[in-house]
Amino acid sequence: MKNLDNQLASDIVIFGALGDLSRRKLLPALYQLEVSGLIHSDSRIIGAARQEQTLDEFKALILENFNNFIKEALDLVAVERFMARLIYQKLDFKDKKSFVNLSNTLSNKNSIKVYYFSTPPSIYGDICAGLDYAKLINDVSRVVMEKPIGNCLESSILINDQVSAFFKEEQIYRIDHYLGKETVLNLLVLRFANSLFTTNWDRDSIDHVQITVAESVGIEGRWGFYDEAGQMRDMVQNHLLQILSLLAMEPPADLSATSIRAEKLKVVRALATIDRHNVKEKTVRGQYTDGFLKGISVPGYLNEEGANTRSSTETFVAIKAEIDNWRWSGVPFYLRTGKRMPQKHSEIVVHFKEQPHNIFKESYSHLPANKLTIRLQPDEGVELQMMNKIPGIASQMHIQENTLDLSFSQAYNNERVVDAYERLMLEILNGNQSLFVSRDEVEASWLWTDSIIKAWQQNNEHPKPYAAGSWGPVASISLIARDDRQWVE
Ligand code: BG6
Image 1 (cartoon, rainbow, N blue to C red):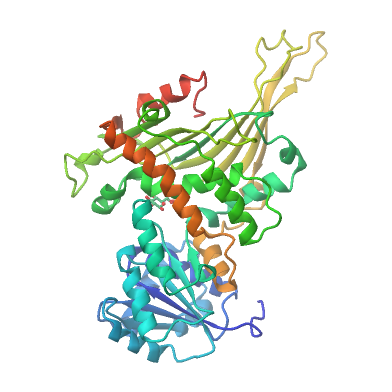
Image 2 (image 1 turned 180 degrees about the vertical axis):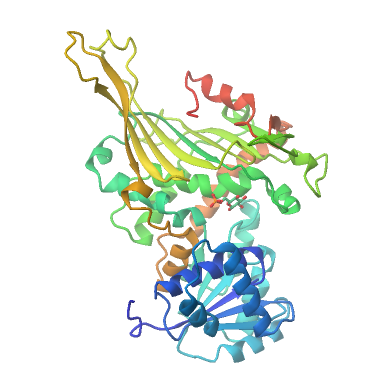
């Protein structure tokens, strides 16, 4: 176990501690850090919420959640240590005066205060005002904000302004949990620790890139929230653009937050604008209808519980994105993401260019190009498709396409895949912002996605139906087929 005694302890306050995110992700992530001995012995975890609740009731709820959401057998000694850190604080987020109670609770003047906003963004400003009123903000406090940060550029500016009035940018940690995923981080290693990919990563070697983030789940009881957002705001504006920018950015000078965030930002800013003139040709919106998943019938989006049957919110998006810069000019990045697709399956496929001349016509009239597949989840790994000679004495050279497969579970002996929130929590405690999104990035991403959403509205572009359990509307196949290419399935 690491000795953390020479570091400062933290008081981690989770606003909205009884909510879904806190119970499913944040508290289990902190528990895992406890198991690994990565939380300072004097650190405390304060669950803040509006409801009246005793500490014992809070602890019982957290334990129940651990049993439900943590796959491995619980380490009872770590559970006991963890429970001893917990404090429950009833708090009316909109009433500044109630923050004085929190101030009494946070009596350890020397600890670093970490404020995790796991609430709707509409009350981030109130929480900041309450913290300020109770004199709970100083230069070393940190604040963590969950997505969505707004639902368009304008609202995100408003939220960022409200928080920035009290915290400096160096104190703000904007979460995109995809940046904490093992395989998303591995993109940095793959690209910048292997000279093979450092030199062949541009318009001269790469034909096009496909990024698919497919989910088999539907709306899971959050129809109202989702319907306001849709797949564009819920997944593309953040998760897909983060993957895209890590894939396409220039080599950062080092792993610092300043270097990485500056390079990612340049990519998002270089994305070619999609507006009403080209939106039809570059994007597809879809909405799932009744269908079957693994043989079981599931309702369509408009037949889900609580649905407004006239909603035209999209649950699927496909985009042909282009990056207008020297490295990527002419290389399309096809993005595709949707709910109720056949399986949970996220991957990046980098299609390299074909050989300029074929000397193996006897085996292949048309030589397949190399393909690098990065499996983000599940079955994390990296796969390279290459041509290989079939062993044998025949006078003709017989060749075939083979796969070099680096499956993480096999290579790393089925080691537990660290959850994204676990890593991000640790980075927050360590004060490292590299894996968090800067304000500029959030705003540049909104600028690009807002233009598409506006163009859909201007063109009255209704979502195209696709059956639950399928790979999206037929139009998404045409989107890529028009360029003489096809989705890898
Ligand atoms: C969230 C979205 O940010 O990411 C959800 O709001 C989505 O709609 C989820 O299901 C996907 O995350 P993961 O880690 O399961 O790929």
